[in-house]
Length: 439
Image (cartoon, rainbow, N blue to C red; front, side, top):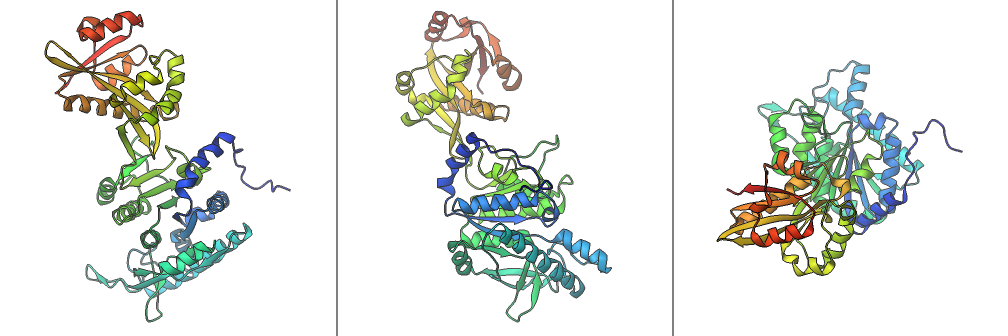
């Protein structure tokens, strides 16, 4: 019988399952290091997040769990009347702060193991971190704050290969047997680097947002470092720490780091198993790219564009027509999946080279996210490299997009190259003619 107090989850749709299955081959037997904020672990949504971890493990994704304890340490210190020297493992940790941290963290580790055991997931708290004292920084002895010296990747790999989920608390032990306080973001990143992980996922109590309140979908390594250095007041120290460590992870070979607002329903799975995601991706590789189209892309592109053809937004094209001019076509990929296209056709008239933007298309699910502008900018740069002095587009429905967002100017059909003008007049589509001079 279902517990009425449990948080209800949206019913899974078959198309959602198909979307997940598309990613399974590339994720199978790859390591994901997932780090939960301590504050998030006290919220009702956390039970759902652990169920999502169970889903990942069932898909043969090798999961390592890390947890933070800042909120629990603050809470216990308030109860005990202890003044903390540091609550996040980044500053100085005196003996009183260490005692509070050990108690809060070990209690939290016990609760997490109990929750995972209830979900029938084998789990073990690991001491795979070899640490040493942080020492003196800026003239201040950090006392019981530690730095990670080495990660025992062999023992962690043995666990995940045996379908046991390792749990790494933000504590470590040095060669003399002393317990030292660690930062959980650093634990997650160092473990990911040592294991050659495919991803680090920071499941936080808040996400990264821009000034207008909209989420920041992607951040490069350089941008992450700059945001950390600026100490952007919109983001608390918790998020800034994640940006700093995400940049380090990418620099050291982890392809992608995600920061996800764990208070959102389905946040973990939605971030991992959809093209756009719901959080912020920090990436070292070319996550989003425009590439030359290949003959094998033609059936996919035709299928993607069919609705726009039916709506008279795009000119109908046959497979043969596209394959004959395949060198003019380009595909926009998002995480390896085609989501848009553009073609650049060249004309020469009276010694002047002109280019046409054609077949500009973005999948419905990815509209209004800047992808169209990216494709047009790519087309313009391609035309410049080909020596074109100007570029034009013909549009029946998107002419405002070209005029208002891209600086194109409406013109008469007489401005088109002769060969293109003749074809334009034969179609009878009465498309708007939009032209832009190329610098």
